[in-house]
Length: 79
Image 1 (cartoon, rainbow, N blue to C red):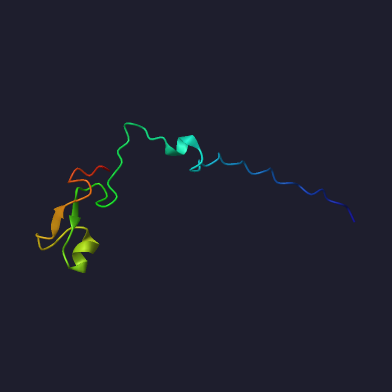
Image 2: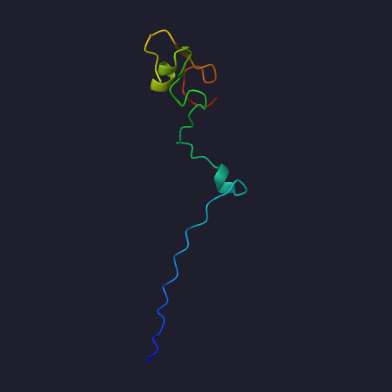
């Protein structure tokens, strides 16, 4: 019986390293990059309506359940 050579697969290419919080470039922000407010997601207003459907749609269908974001004062940028 003839012997066959085992063909080896080429090694998979390694992905570039992902920066971690210990690395300096992880914390550097580009000055042109906009950082959105965490409370309103950059919209500038939050929903205060008690209806679950308004929260699911991300706007108040009644018209009176939206107020200015208290975290960013309506700018949408992180304070």
